[in-house]
Length: 141
Image (cartoon, rainbow, N blue to C red; front, side):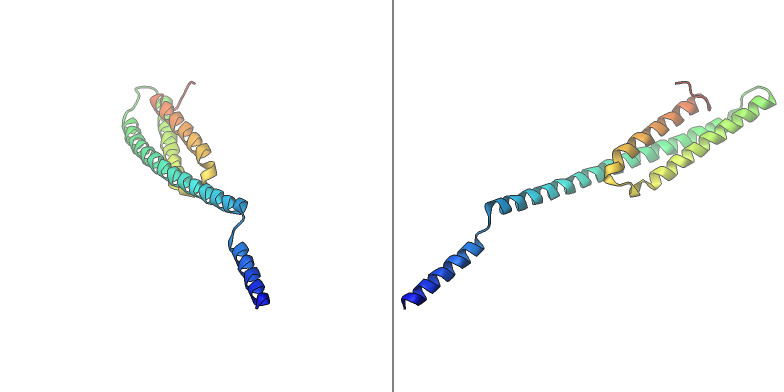
């Protein structure tokens, strides 16, 4: 009977010890869960930021289309060569605006880690186009 009590006690202790988790391991699991939650929140924030940026960019691209249409109908009074250059410059603006549209349309595939670089590059390109439209193809920076 003593042996069975000792055996039961040892079994209880071993089961109890097995059920008790290492505090460091538990802390590591909690830290891992917190880190994963932060990553998920960052992705959600990044997605929301992307949607706002994309909407703003699409509005600007649409405004550019309207301004380019105005530029197409506006002719300079000058030589035939000057008008040909003007038409060529306006066509180049239209092409750049179209390229920006394609870039923003395909930006959904941009990894989260590359989002800041994409946003900066796209913003710079949009700014350059705006400057070129004001100066009809020539931008002095």
